[in-house]
Length: 143
Image (cartoon, rainbow, N blue to C red; front, side, top):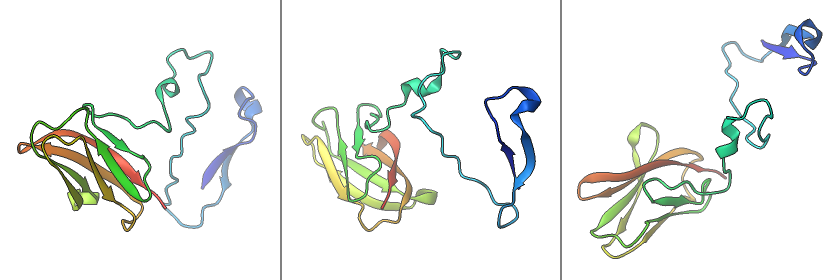
């Protein structure tokens, strides 16, 4: 069951809360969280977390940018400068299962890989160099 607030802008009991207002088709069903980051800042909350969200911009991790995010066909990792030694761009799925690898030779600044045949979902990426993880992040694959 879901509870419903018919008039969310009204204070107190005037909001018209209806407990068990919507019946779900199965027991123990969890509703996904889809926050709306495009609402903007609330005037009464100067530290609103939505101010720092950039929906369409790639997020650099230690200077490494993985884009586009979300990706549907190809995925590209861009280093902040030429690699000083060989590196590997690794894409892993749930449970750390490696789905793709792309080698980055010394002197190169980018790696590219196809994600067209991967199932949609959230993947973890790492940039490995010299036996250590230099950067890591997440990327979404969509259809």
